Length: 341
Image (cartoon, rainbow, N blue to C red; front, side):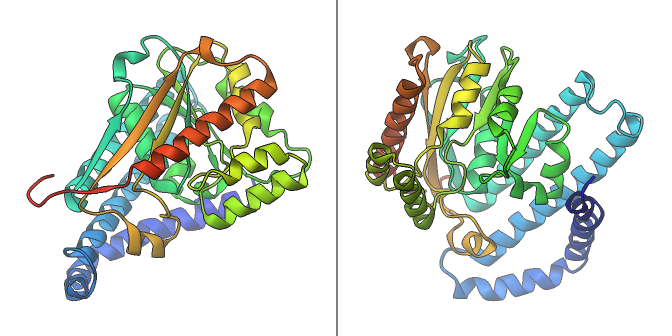
């Protein structure tokens, strides 16, 4: 039990519950302020719509934290919380939370989120390794929602440790198969073994989710990733990374470890547009998509089509990342015409 863990559980989580209660108590005032600001901002009633999405999200967080606290007691003060029964219950709660949030977000923001690619029945009885580009927390939520709601999968997720500062995410993902990792591990940390352990034993309705870039895309991170490849003497990979303008050069170690640990799994690669650059509160305020059509593109690669050798697999992954980069360039978010939802 670390100091950071105590701060997240004993300070951040109660503070979030208190903020949510205060927000609801003072909501009429906030509605008046948002209504006054909305004519000054681009888009239709932007401040009001963002306020309501925030209220919904904080309310979901608060209710879920109370439910999770009750589950901890019901499982014998946490002694049985990792048993299969409770794992299944937590997956159902996560699916329900995502369904409620996305239903309300789509309604209020007038978003159309569509998937383009294999249908949900394209992978019957086959475990999946899902590789997605990373451009902010919005794509993580959308991908998990799609996997659970449309593809009926139980995801196992590898994600950055900074997301553990969200109290609900912190608690839930420590009760189901998941890993919080840092993109820059300390000496002696074997992240590939941790990832392999999470990917091992996938069954027919599982989906192992990894973001090979290791972080959200920004132009600065793209430049640093290319410079790092140069320093390591990987000039050919650096040249390929320089040709990709919308994605970071993938870090293959975790993906290769997952491939070896799940020898029966097909690979699904995922790209999207419209959720880019939502990294900070300011980004959400300025760039949260409204009145748009957002597409997630899925490609299925059967296991027999994946190369066997390590270098060949790295080359294969870079080739697919170049394909994702081209797709992003060709597909930008579309405005939703008035009157359509």
